[in-house]
Length: 115
Image 1: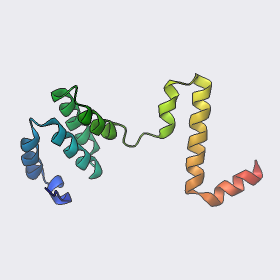
Image 2: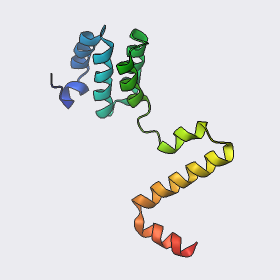
Image 3: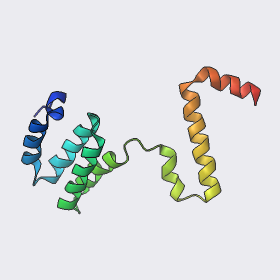
Image 4: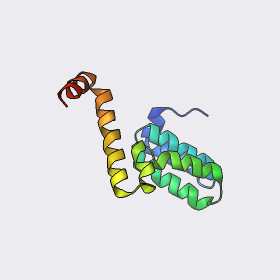
């Protein structure tokens, strides 16, 4: 089954899709991934929460939901729970500066020469 962007944007069509996956947690979580890809993150997270509530021990639902819940989270946040506060701050700052430098390479070179 192919779902286009217009279908995901239409409230009526989305309600029809939701009725088809209402008691099927894996398809519900997959629909959430499509919603997320379509820029509907809040709706996708709510749908994933419903899917997990329906199937709390289903590994596939948890993997799909995890992808939705962590969407947009910087990678530097994940090791923070294992670091001391000083290590966390240093790791996150390094990742943020590195990310900024990748997006503006001409400024990164200038900063490297100055500092």
